[in-house]
Image 1 (cartoon, rainbow, N blue to C red):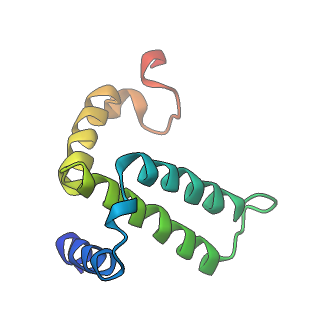
Image 2 (image 1 turned 90 degrees about the vertical axis):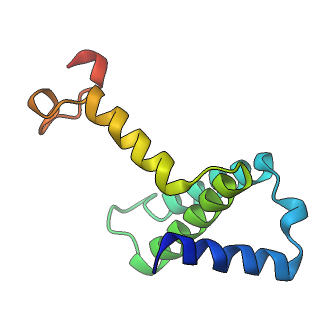
Length: 106
């Protein structure tokens, strides 16, 4: 399924329920934080979380992230690809491979 098809499905669901009035960027950002907390809770006491619960919470995080990008007129694919280009520069393979060190300490 393409990203654009997913966005069409999300926009349709929101429109059918008239939820757009609640989807201001601030509320969507808050919702991402809330859902991220619920995703983290899946791993709270055990690193082997229930994959079904993780899947559900991750879907919520992604849904709100897509909706936030859309509400701001941003293309999710483009901003991720742009960030990847920046990250490749900050973390050159020869310095960062196999390391978790922050870029300013490489």
